[in-house]
Image (cartoon, rainbow, N blue to C red; front, side, top):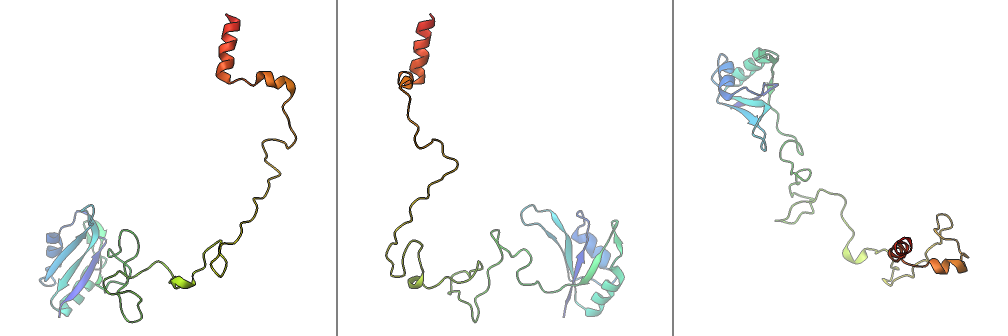
Length: 180
């Protein structure tokens, strides 16, 4: 049975061939893979090395963990299975979709929901502004604002203001004629 090792803290210019050469004194690796970012194509700084024999894998961990490789100490340990909800399986819009299984409310062919509690059934929903029987309830009167009013309640125009009730563009034209 093959054993997969996680190799972390790699320099970004490391290649698969260099890792194969590094691990070959322990035994010939079955596969070597440095992971790259899906969007940029740049290396992510870690990879995986797979050995066909468990003894070779244990020797590689013992020999290469914290060993300097291109100026950085490597992190080498046995790879663990990916945890649910972590890693690059997350969608760009949120966490990964849950698999439909026993106790799941997802219908076959539809993605599982991951955004909160289930809504109440359609007939039992209560809509705002409606009574329990579904009829509209009267709205409340708009409250009067005492502070922050623009005009006072009893202000009236004075009689001399009536003569000045002219649009500003007409007033400017009249002033120009008077001044000329």
